[in-house]
Image 1 (cartoon, rainbow, N blue to C red):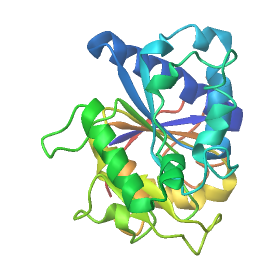
Image 2: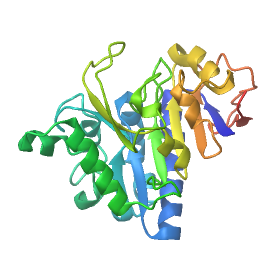
Image 3: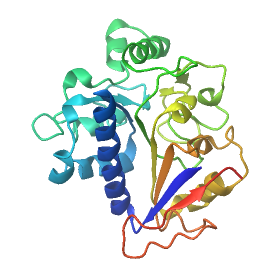
Image 4: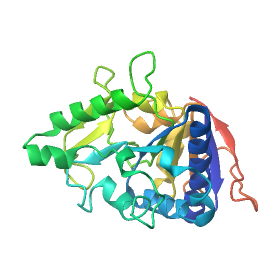
Length: 273
């Protein structure tokens, strides 16, 4: 059963998520000496990164002990605006003004390395999987276990680059997967992604989903029949997950979601239908 938190607006989603990122990563460092986080991309992630740079949050964690990974990315260069890394490079990873994360602890998908070597997506997938296996603890199935995975949800119900019926939801596939260019969303470029079973294996998952445009899909994912092949975001509906929505995104949920005066108010427990 995922925890649901409803806050007034998109900015409050970013701030609530940032508070939890600091708490989760600090707890991981306290327990194990290191924290492994998989970042996401998009405008929601950008708002989160800016919230993390607020002095009280920036100073509340030992960012030098954080290992940064990505949940998915497009097969474009790191500096490309479509790259999920680019927005982090300009915010939380920026030299001098960022969080002070050691560049040696920042692990983007090696897409630029592949380009320089004349290699393709299979090399990126294999290399990233090897790096994860080398640095992260593993579960009983041998898959890497993140302390935190950050997610958004697409309008079709996808998370990561795990599209409905795609390779990243097929249990036969490995922990890192090559994904063909989607035809139903932009940008229509090939991608690489973590498999969705790493979401269920992670110690914590945060799903940030503001906006009225996704309200119907949010209700379907969180309260609808269990159909993860059609709605991969349902794989982030387990007890390790917290969904942070604004009032607009939560508008079609059947459960009570009044926020009151507390921007963290409105928690509810949701399970499989």
